Image (cartoon, rainbow over all chains, first blue to last red; front, side, top):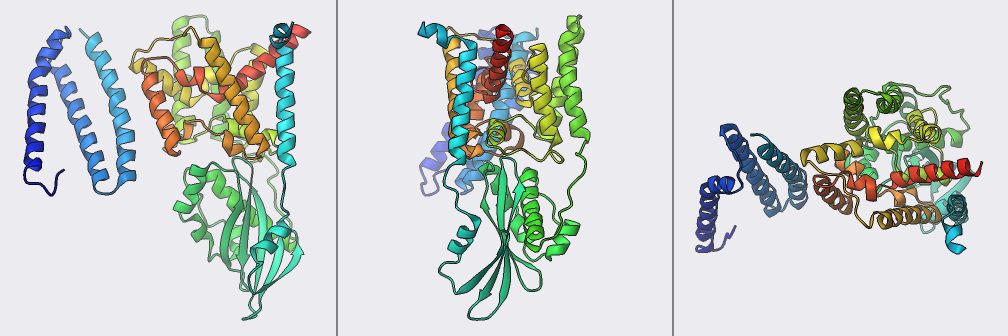
Length: 98
Length: 378
């Protein structure tokens, strides 16, 4: 990310780690606040979706960073859209299933 | 009084027809450089002597080396009209170069020929073996344009040399044509079944088949550019593109006879895509307060873009549908953006493209308007 900096590079990843930790810890409470009746398979689906969404963003932006703008934008466009759609579907599933 | 005239369906129909006829006539009268003039201009500053043989053939003699090559020009049937190709054949009857000089194909699809090195595959071929054995495969996703180029070479050479052109004596009726008939009649019958459960099941079966086969496998939709091409006087090859006539004529006839738009309701692959998205997001049908105004905007936009494409005699101007972007991942950046927005909105609002953006909805709307105006009058 910050190739020429010895400060920003580790700082960036520390901040990213903090954000991910907060997301992981607060997910339970967020589900509780929204009165979602979560169980093991719902959590599994949510985790798979979240990991794949992150991989999509990481892979797409890496391609753009490696001067493959066209491929990166295609990747983000196709898989990003797909994961938004899947996310909406997953949300409906989590809400509906008791 | 004026409001009454404007609200008269027959007045609207006649006005639209008059505008279309005027635009098509203007498009036809645009300056048209003759092929002879164009070839002469191409070689204006070269040291070559160009000898006109006939409308399709020129003999080019290099004044320095004395080499003699033959230049041909031919036309093939593309998606949005005729594709004109110039190609040069050397004294050993080997094709030296191929250049499309005039075409109205959709840019992103036509570009595939360049990217797929289609012209490079033609160069180096012996002309007669190319015509007789067709050793070159069409580029996937741009089949009609690829075949148009090969057809232009075939016709150009045959007409230039005074050879007879073998025409198909019967139209191609295959799986696609059969499927179109089944889907359209199946879609109509689904609406006729009295049991609502069976009716919904049947409609979904028809829609899913249309989505997969018409959308992903064949990428066949009714598009505005095709209507623009038809109104400009270009009729797709009946023998090779029977499916286009079946899809359009049966859809229109069903609308005229039954007053039901079966194509948009059950067969259009992108309509099905939106239905699937609306199921995913549990979208609700929304009819905003300004629904009528939006429909007017949609109608005027479609009419405007159709007229512009007719005036410029370029049907590809009228192709702003997102079908290619969705089913083939082939489109320009604007259409990809439009598709993205449509997909996201479709998750929350039922069929936004069909309701407010699709040009074909308005084409069917015009047919319906004409039908109702005539019925009311009679």
